[in-house]
Image 1 (spheres, helix red, strand yellow):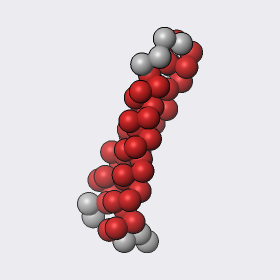
Image 2: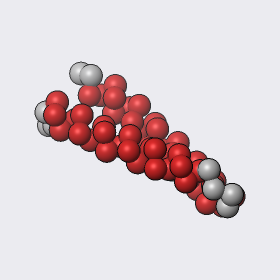
Image 3: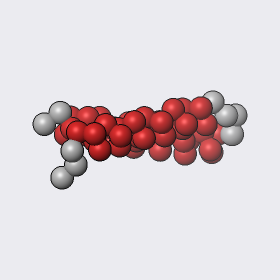
Image 4: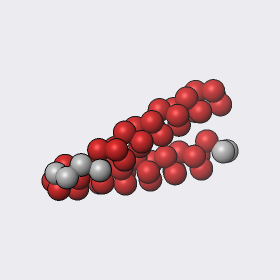
Length: 56
């Protein structure tokens, strides 16, 4: 299993991806916009679940 340092590094990586997709969402292209929002939703729920798991 992952140690605390590995967990926090993974969480940092996920958060950076979240910021990247948030900036993509600002685009005017609606199909890309919709895709980016669905990706962001998946990453957000993943980060949330991971955060809860990493507290154990």
